[in-house]
Image (tube, rainbow, N blue to C red; front, top):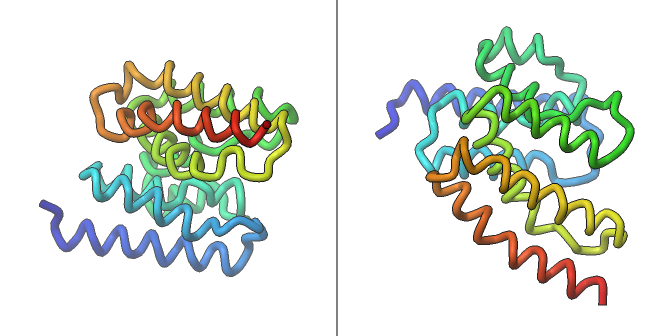
Length: 180
C-alpha cells in the first residue's frame, strides 16, 4: 500500500513532466501521454517510487531541454541515473547501435533501469509496424527480441517482463503482416 507522501512525489513528477514538455519539448509523438502510461504502468505494478518517477521522466533528457543535473537536483541521484540509462546517446548516429548502447547502460545499472525500459518498450510496441519503413520495422523487432533476451536475468520473474515476452510474438506477427 502506498502512502500519501509517495503519491505527492509522483504527482510532483507528473507536473514537472508536463511543464518540461510545454516549455521545451518538440516531439511530435504524444510523449506526455506515453510517459504517463509508462510511469503509471510501473505504479500499478507496485514498483518503488523512484522507479515510477523514473518511468514518468524517462524521455525528458531525449525530448526536452531538461538535463540530468536538473532531474538529479529535483528528484535525486537514483532517478537521474535511471533516466540517464534509459535515454539514448544522441552522439551515436546508427539507430540500432544507439538502442543497444542504451540497453547495455540499463543492464549495467540493474533492475530499476531495466524495469523502466521494459515498460517503455511495452508501451511503444503498440506502434511497432504501423506505417514504418520496412527497415525500421525489422530494427524494432530485432531490438525488442534482444532486450527481452538480455533483460530476463534482471526482471524475468516480474509481470512487466512476462507481459513484454508474451507480446513479442503478437508484435512480430503484426510487423510481418504489414510487410505483405
